Structure formats: C-alpha cells, structure tokens
Amino acid sequence: MSDLDPKDWDAFRRTAHALLDACVDRLAQAGDHPWIPVPEDTKSGYALSDTPSGLEAAATRMAKEVMPYGVGNTHPRFFGWVHGTGLASGLLSEMVAATMNANCGGRDHAAVYLERAVIDWTRDVMGFPDTASGVLVSGTSQATVIAMSAARLRALGAHVRAKGNSTRLTAYAGAGVHNAARKAVELLGIGADNLRKVDDWSQVPNMIAADRAAGGTPFMLIGTAGSVDFGTFDDFHALADLAASENLWLHIDGAFGAWLKLADTPWRELSNGLERADSLACDFHKWMYVPYDCGLCLIRDETEHRAAFAARPSYLAPQKEGVAGGDPWYCDYGIDLSRGNRALKVWAAIESYGGAGLGAAISDNCARAAQMGALIKASDKMALAAPVVSNLVVFTADQTLPPEAQSELNAGIAQKLQLSGDAVFSTTLADGITCLRAAITNHRTTAKDIEIAIAAVDRETP
Ligand SMILES: *Cc1c(COP(=O)(O)O)cnc(C)c1O
Image (cartoon, rainbow, N blue to C red; front, side):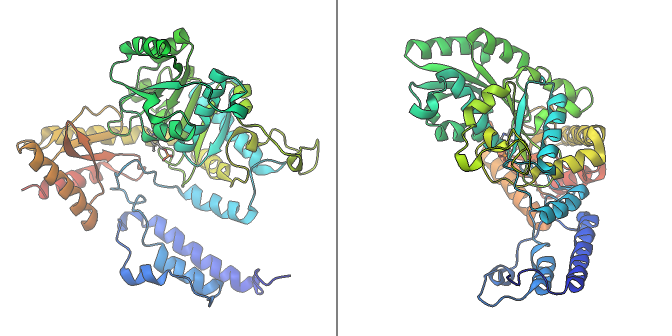
C-alpha cells in the first residue's frame, strides 16, 4: 500500500475544515473581490519541484496563492463574454463528487441516475418529447459536434461511420452563429466553406437548391437561441417549417438563451418553437450558474443519437446486474469514455433552488440588461449599438466621436475598468465599431451594480 492517503485523518479533517471555511468566506464576500492579476512572483511560485510540501501546506497555498486570482466572474459587476457565476450548491456538490470520484461513462451507480434525472428534467423544460435522449458534456462546443454527428448519420446513413463522408455536406446558419459550429464542421470533415452564413432565411431555399444542383447534400439548419454578440433569437417555428419542407435536420445552439424557457414573459417568448428542433445544445455553466464545466446535448430521437456513437469493445460488455449493469451507458451517446460527475452539481442546483428560483434569477438578469439599456439611452453621449432583447447590451461610450475614435475609447474603457476592478465589460464589433458589451448572466448583479458600472463608463469618457 502506498502512503498517499493521510496517516492522521484528524489532522486532515482540521486542514479540510480550514480550507472549507476559506472557500465559504470567499463566496460570502464575492462582492469584495473583482478580478486582479496574478502577481509575478505568485505565478512563478506555481512551478512544481521534486520536493513535496504535504497536504496541509498545499491546502494553505491553494487558499492564499490560488483562490484570490480567479477570472472574476464570481463578482457582481462581471459582465464579460458569457460567464456563469457559480453557486453555493456547487461548492457542496463538488466536495461530494471529489469524494465519490465516479467515472460516469456507464455502469450502475448514483451519478448515472442523477444524469438521467437532470436530462429528463431539462427535456421537459425544453419541451422535447419522451423519446429524446441527452448526454452531459464539457459545453456547447462539444454538444454541437455530437448533434452534428447524429445529423450527418441521418443524411449519409450508418455507413458514414465506416466509410467517412461520401459526399459534400452543406449546412446553413444565421449570421450570428457561434464559432462552435465552424469548429464542428471542420472536425467532422465537412469543411468551414460548407457552413453557409445566412443573412436572410427567406433566401435559404434558393441556396439549398443551388447546392443540390451543384452536387452537394444539404443536411442541416442551425438556429441560434441567444446570439453571443447581441442576444438575438431566430424564429424557430419558421426554421422548423423550413427544415421539414427541405427534409433537413434542425439544430439549435441555445448555449445560454435556451434557458429563457424558465424566464417570465416577455423574455420567455423568445424561445418559442425551440421545442421543435431535432437537437439542442445548451450550457448549465452559463445561465444556470452551475460551476464549470457542464453543457448538454439533447437529441429528439434516442435511436439516432445512439446510432452515431454506440460502439463498445468486448471489455466494456454490459451485464444485467452488478456494477457492470446500468445500461444504457453514456459512453454510447458521446465522445468520452471516462467522464466526471457533471450531473451532481446540476442536480444539486435544481434540487436546491428549483426551476422557479433559477428562472427568477434569469428574468432578473434580463431586467438588469433592460435597465442598463435605459441608462445608456438616457445619457447624452452613450448609445446602444443594437436593441436590448434579452441579456446582452452592446453600446458605445461616445457616439459623437468618429468611428475610429469610438473604437479606441471603448476598448480603452473596457481595459481600464477591468484593471480598476470597477466592472468587467468585454468588447465586440458592431457596424465596424469596437463597442462595449455586457452579457448579464450573473445572479449577484443588483440594480445598484448596473448604476455603478454605467457611472464608471461615464467617468472614463472625456
Ligand atoms: C458559449 C457559447 C458557445 C460555446 O459553448 P461552450 O460551453 O463555451 O463550449 C456556443 N454558442 C453560444 C451562443 C455561446 O454563447
């Protein structure tokens, strides 16, 4: 036996309790801790040596030298990119998950039943039928690859698994489609040039006809529920009708926006029709606030999902009973064989707060975005680059300047406010101008935080 386990469990208990206290303090005081850069000597101090320092010293270092230097997304005025905040339930569930150390590729144990419970719950929230299946994944990027694999199998037949792509496949996505779709077409050998960007969906039947005439095989429409730049939503009923009439697979990227299914009117209505998709990708780690990482691929027809991935060599043969029971196994629904216990942190969040509690936070985020939009409209200099429809606010600090000067000003303000700890905005291009961008997926953000953040932008605008 090795001596990797503690010899003195009471000493370990004291170490663990002290670290847990430090973690709880950190969460309780999240509002006092914006992003700060990692000091140079701390960074270089992370280098590993051949001389171990033991559990207690490692715990102290984690509390003092690691915990203070996060991304800052636990802070109430973090609005950058689309980052979830994490939850107190996550601190508890991660502790239990580490203790159990379950491998969730399959077999018969609690975590696989939790994963089924999480998928069933989400399937109902999203309005998918009982025939749907799902798998928890690292995020929407991976979920997109899984959904596209199933769509490809429908278009080309099961022999695609042995023979590869027998024809040039083409897919169609709105102009706001996320880069994840491009990565997926590249990975599956379809090629980025065959992902057609659509400005006007009414033109797509013509595009499809042209691709067919040129010997291509149109196979997939990709709709977006919550575009990453402006938080816009496609018309999913129109897309589902188009997919049906052209006999194409409809996939929806709902990374964060799909969760408007839990929100109040009017935001909830943006997700209407999403339930008609063949597949949906969404994240728990963004707008469900669950700790990183966890996304979901949901597929309408379980048989199509399994047909794209099931392949078990003899050493993974299932049994009726015993730990090798528990069929179906999640390794037959995705890319990974060994998988961590992502289900527990999601289950703990839903069990702790309920769909209503999480939905109330989502609705409040939309209300905060609307508030930010109203403050910008009321200002003399600031201007919105696009209407606020959900939780995204894109704006310029001074619309009276020429475009280039606006870009320089906005990028400078984003950087200054990140460094000062006032607020984290990211940036994006709108009509060629680098704008400030707030994505509010933060359950700690209050109305006061929005006022402080906009006042800080105003202060930095000459
Ligand atoms: C974040 C995001 C993705 C990518 O999801 P990951 O979970 O980061 O892999 C895809 N689409 C949209 C709209 C997103 O916001």
